[in-house]
Amino acid sequence: MLLNKYFTIRERREDETGSNFLISLNPDHQVYQGHFPGDPICPGVCSIQMIRECAEIVLGQRLTIGTVSQCRFMELLTPSKNKDLLLKLTLSKAEEGMVKAVASILSDDAQTSFLEYKGEYSPQC
Image (cartoon, rainbow, N blue to C red; front, top):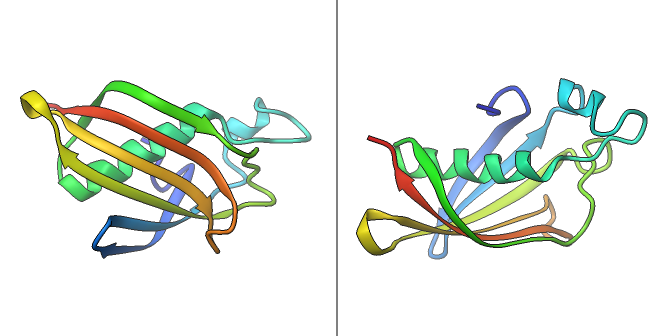
């Protein structure tokens, strides 16, 4: 789990399109010591994990990544320059109990897009 270590949720809002999370990255997290020392960037896998953890909060249950049909990195995400972010998340039911997710990670003012994501999760029993 990365929540409250790698990132924190400052606020959660719901609207007609889904859930919006205002999050803050922890630029002192140990992952940045190796990715990359002196010029840290957020690992893509951590961004995908943040999306999953926010989806778990919305649904109130643990999820397993089933498929990733799109994961487009638009800009480098650096914790020193982009500490505060907006994570937009839309969830819907898919076939056979799966949950479909469409997500974006943006700058907190929504002017810069860092990641566009589409995938499916399966609920853990």
